Length: 436
View (cartoon, rainbow, N blue to C red):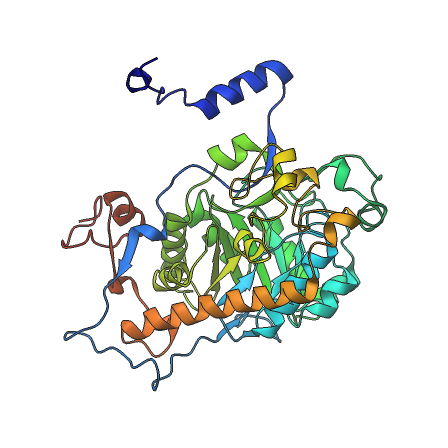
């Protein structure tokens, strides 16, 4: 056979053929974890314009660049004070093991930032490990207790997630241990499918009532966030603000999940890049930019990503999958276990199976031993510190004494798609496709 004459189909590459044949064999959609694998415009498509003559850079070793941010200044009696603009996103106990939750809590606390619960309620270890803990209030209400709302430092009302806007979460039966089942008051070993919408509200008026109810339960102390999956971002942001949210969390389609249908992960939602810009536009139109804080998640990986999200107008970012990778998700260790799952390090998305080779997304006691919570916390702390230093480095290069002083004018786009989505000029031009 002459290999030069063998050509794969662009419409039917090998992974598409394999999925068609799997579907033909099983007659059921594919469920997996992790986030979108398709290529979409990202923060990689933007670059900063470092200062030279027309702008004045700051000296990294002598001139400070602050990173603190306050969340919940609109109504809450006790807003959250973060030392860095990077938080840990909501991931449930059940989806993650107890060691992973503990490591994330201690690592975030060491850097003066918050972590977030997830579906299924709050564990004692998580509360103890996290100096600042955001409690997610989800459609399923699994594990929800009013006392836990009061024990939290903020409440995040989840109306949607980037990996599955319009859909609910899943936790498959193999991860439902006695403890997980007890916390969620559901049977052990049975698949749990969370609701896609809150049972007691169907629109923004009901959301306003729910936010008031949560404020009354917590004596108006806790900041109330509203989280949405990025789709009709401008309208959703406006409605959440009008309903009384203290902060908006926008989760782009690159956001991860422990388990959902692949068609959700790959085919629903918009990338984080345009979602940030749309949310900022909505806040500015309501004259609420910086009064209602904006937290952005979905595919944040580097300090460059953090700096670019802040430059577009976000107050903070939230990381999920990247924080798990800091804990060694997809690391080249225990490779035989990856192979047993039919994958390899770097491509694993088998969070849903409960057979996580590195002990993060599992309830198996033997696998979970592979993650030392103390060492894991140190890795999370180091990763957050690196992101912060990178973000400060870029801000100083643009002449900014606080990372929040970064602005869209500090960036240009390398592709027409990114220029149009972020509404910054294409590099070397004054042109913003679709806008000028």
